[in-house]
Length: 114
Length: 108
Image 1 (spheres, rainbow over the protein chains, first blue to last red):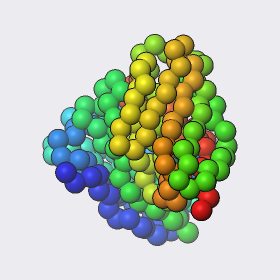
Image 2: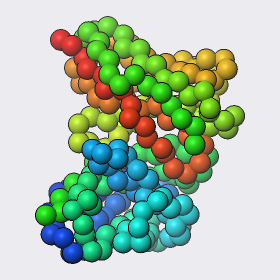
Image 3: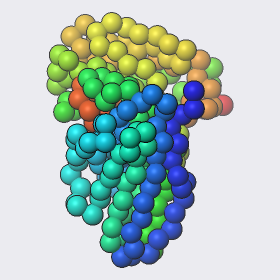
């Protein structure tokens, strides 16, 4: 079974631009979570989607948004990019996102904001 | 969310067993103990999880104390490819909360 895939793997943007990242979960998985990883803050939870609905949200500004499609694929969007948004963005999928449902991570998208 | 304490770094000789401790004294009754590892700049890799009983899979063994306040991840025969940051995470709801983990270095 194929793992979680994320595109693109690397991205360079400038301040003020916006960016869209894509995540394809493991086949049959309906929950998709997004995380941001930076050297200073570590791995932080952004949000989780299940059946096209955002169920859980971390402590990030409204510039960070996401959505999920009927095939469980998910996108996240960051608008008005800031230098501090440079990070590794990770997507994880699980069957239903419930109690102790194991999450499997993709390889991540490395975003650099100049 | 339960807090965890892990040593910041450990070394282990190649071929020996690597034992990584984790203290999670505030874990709640319905939280599992999950272990992930992250090799530099890659996505975290799931290793193993457990609730009360010890668990073993093809990658590792997990020993959980009877009071569930601590656990130990055991890599039975460490190889150079096991060099990574290892995270111990009490997990019960939808989001994983990663701490700073243990940087394990396997020495040839």
